[in-house]
Every structure is written in structure tokens, then in C-alpha cells.
Length: 177
Image 1: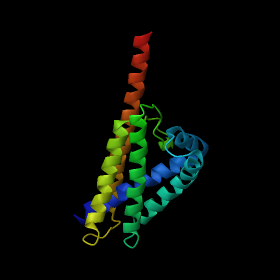
Image 2: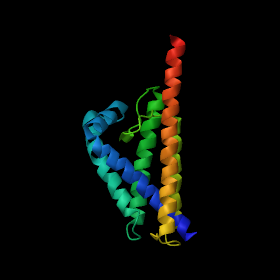
Image 3: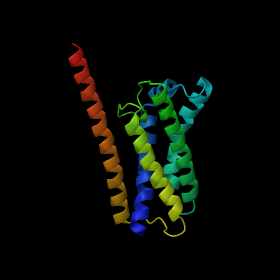
């Protein structure tokens, strides 16, 4: 059980690390994606967009250490709640925009799949909070490999979904022609 608990922390840590790095690599594009959501006034959107990758890096690092695990988990939940809120608002307004989860790296739409992925990550974070004190995070070869494999599965699922969205879009355009 300790390995599984550690793997959850590593998975969540790597997800936030990948997300942060990919946003930073295409920072101006990411800021524009945040503006496209139109959830916050422009000034706050810009501040949020600038701070977000660095908050994600903080989450990523803090999830790996027992002393900061709770802070990282709480911050991850707050970020995930803000993401869920933004995506749900976009869905309610029937906007079609890129989710921006990984900057411009994966061009996926903000949709039900995005909400499901956020929900899965929230479940991981809640599991970490519930296990706090019972299981320390241990960076063993087994937990690292398991956590990174879990992250890989989530990222591959996102990539497959992006390819599916693109194929459906092409088919719809062909049918209209």
C-alpha cells in the first residue's frame, strides 16, 4: 500500500510538472488561452496565467516531500477546482476552445474528457490527503516507475482523445463538403 500511495504522489507531481513546463515553453500562447476562457476579468486572467505554471511547479515539488505534502495537495486541489470551474463554465456557454492543460503541446478542446481528467486528478489528491500520516511518500524505484507509468497512461489517453477530436473534426468537415 505504501508503494501505491507513493506512486499516486509521484503521478500527481509529474502531471503538474509536465503541465507547468509545457506552459512555460509556450508562455505567450498559454496566456492567450487563459484569456479565451473569459472566466476572470482580463487583469486577473493575466495574473493567473503568469502565476499558474509556477504554482504548478510548487505543487510538483511539494508533493514529493513528507513535510510539504499536505500543502502541495491542498494547492493541487485548489488549482484543480479552478480548472474544473473554468472548463464547466466554457461548456455551459457552449464555447469551443483549447483546454490549455499542456500549453500548446496537446491541442485538445475543453470538454467532458477534460472534466473527467480533472476529476481523476482530484481523486488522487483526496487519496493523498486521506492517507497522510498513514503512508509516507517514498521515492523508490517501484513507486517512481509506477507513478510515472500512471502519468504516462493519463497523457496517452489525453493524446488519443486529441487525435480522436481531430479526426471527428475532419470527418464533419468532409461530410459538410
